[in-house]
Image (cartoon, rainbow, N blue to C red; front, top):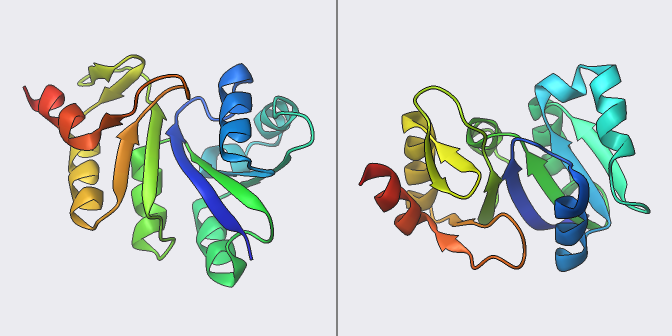
Amino acid sequence: MGNIVLTRIDSRLIHGQVMTKWVNQVQANKIVVVSDELANDEFMRSIYLMSAPAGIEVECVTEAQAVEQYKADVFGSGNVLLLLPSLKALKNVYDQGLTVKSVQVGGLGGGPERKVVFQNITLDDPDAAILDALAADGVQIVFQTIPEDAPQTVDAILKKYRG
């Protein structure tokens, strides 16, 4: 049975030194990427898999597959870094039974109706509602792009967003 050592939201998914730093920080030996889009795009999936840190097992699954694998044995064995592209994807799998106790938001890109809340992290109203729901359910949520950054609490971020 696997052990989820970090659940991270990052729209860039696996990318360079940032992912290497987090894998080392939490001592993960497996990354499970949960993305319907990436799981169904063989070419892009191969590019992402090639960019993973050396010696780290990487699996890319759909949201439905993630829920199924979690319920079966928490993604197999080892220390798992669970990586999702959006808060919406997290909420989808969470509502289907993939339980997490804590979440780190590390990167959400810009776009219409989105507001910068911390470094390269933006939120919109649906994201804020998801954060409210997860926090109300007892999920610990922090915003942190790299290990060297001081984690920002969800309360501080939502206050900034709504301010």
